[in-house]
Image 1 (cartoon, rainbow, N blue to C red):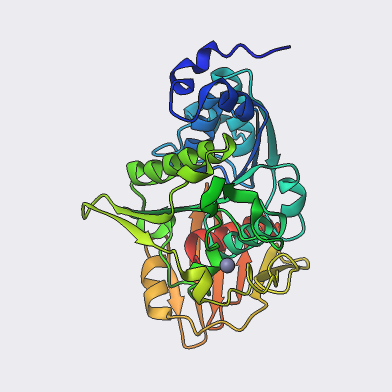
Image 2: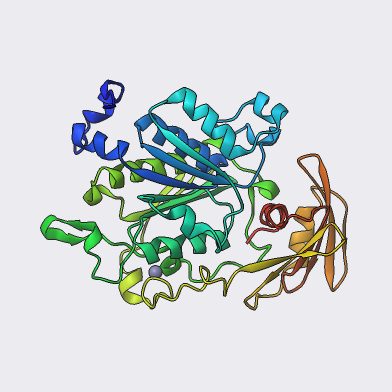
Length: 365
Ligand SMILES: [Zn+2]
């Protein structure tokens, strides 16, 4: 059945859009990695704009504290204990029934990301940790799929559109005579993740709803440019905003690819996708606990700083070897034991995905 395009009239009027652009959108697929604040805001916009197929992957359920910024969810979803991906699918069905949504309740990791990305025209980052971002970035570079990085914590947000350099001369993003628009990848710009516990998370320092919303809307705008073939309009700089300090910065990233020797997009070494880097989880038999360790050598953790943040969530004990913290999350009690090299044992769950979630939220990195 042909789509009724009349609902898209106001965006088809835009330069470079038109009916042709709208038909491209309706025929395209966006993979939304994580359906928290970034994911819900972006999915909401892309669904309203008529992106034909959204694949939404998220491992979590909705909590009351999410409603402050996660625009597709409401109090009933919390009461019904619905997974985020599924609740987003139901809400989008009410917003635009022309859009197909595939909801996936899963932990994104190296064993499954390429499967979820198959057929996607763009990857949209709604993630909460560096490790999965490296994974998404490698998936984007390996398969030549644009990757829209976004991150927000506290009152600060950053966003950046990656049109990956590909093996065969970057012809994918060619813009008439001016040549390729390929941009440095996420790893060109952030070669190494900060050690665990060094970077703040929304669960430790909070997050301003409008900041994360601006970032997600920037990602959505870049997605619309890419999916309508307007590569020449893709923003070449990294957006950095702080709504509390009233600063908006466009960081120039132009020469990061030429000047560097990126392990990912230059050397085409996909260590996260191959499971050689990043963390690995092991369920501890009979203990209702999961161990999480890092495959790469990490720096030594700053116990004082991490303990101070964890104290906001429950009792904390520290000695020279480890931090032990009680955490209440979504009405469940966990005990997190964190060792100086970043290894952690999370008690209160036998589910590796839940343990990774607790680690990402309260330790970060
Ligand atoms: Zn790179």
